[in-house]
Image 1 (cartoon, helix red, strand yellow):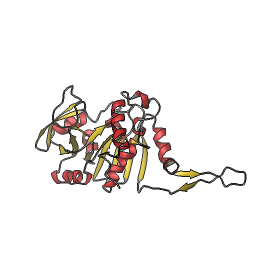
Image 2: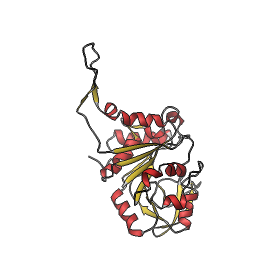
Image 3: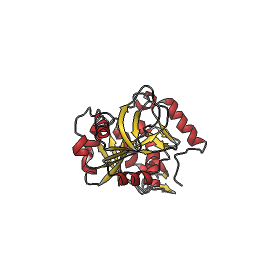
Image 4: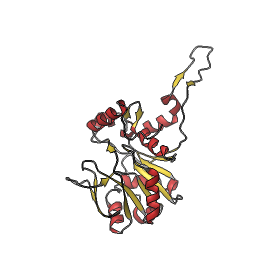
Amino acid sequence: MKIAILCGGQGTRFREVSDVIPKPMAPIGNRPILWHVMKIYAAHGFNDFILLLGYKGECIREFFLNYAAYTNDVTLDLRQDGSNRPVFHDPTAEPWRVTLVDTGEKAMTGARLWRARRHLENEAVFGLTYGDGVGNVDIGALVRFHQSHGKLATLTGVHPPGRFGELAVNGPAVVRFNEKPVHSAGYINGGFFVFNSGVFDRYLNDREDLILEREPLQRMAADGELMMFAHEGFWHHMDTPHEFEVLNNFWMTGKAPWKIWK
């Protein structure tokens, strides 16, 4: 199963970082938060990623095109008779296949997903999540849940303080999707979606202002095609400097709940 990750937003609430680099490249410890998201999926055996780039996407391209140099000690022999070829010390590698897709600097989330269609539409199901939210989500159980109910879409419901997409549920069925309410109770949208490929023809298009969390998800909920996988464990978004600090404190103390890999 391929995993698409939304990496193109401008991070307007996090200007301290996003004026310099895209928010998914903000470091948690010594790796971008995007790397942490990918490690969560890889821990469950999902290693084929489609990164939906936009704002400052060249930073993400550079990171992956030079991944070995960014993640290992490296020696360069710059002397006149040296080879000038890099030697990587204790090289680490990931079993990842990474496709970098330019989806436009100003596109909203629904349009970004549509513009990666050619990489996803031949998959029976595919995953999608945000490049700035981590959790100890059981991805394998999420996929099995999606396959069991026969509907078009599944999102992961989580329990942090409300400011995201609040869900009204009837059992596991999402009956109403309310984008970013002022006050929230119960489950909210934590990303970690699974979609059938039919979502493209029924609910998405190339309109630049198409926000996945508004018209498409709201229509899926109204049509009975959106289900919720309840995640009772840790989940945390990184949308502000405070949240950035919280996640880094978890990591630096060795108590990051989303670190489910060895």
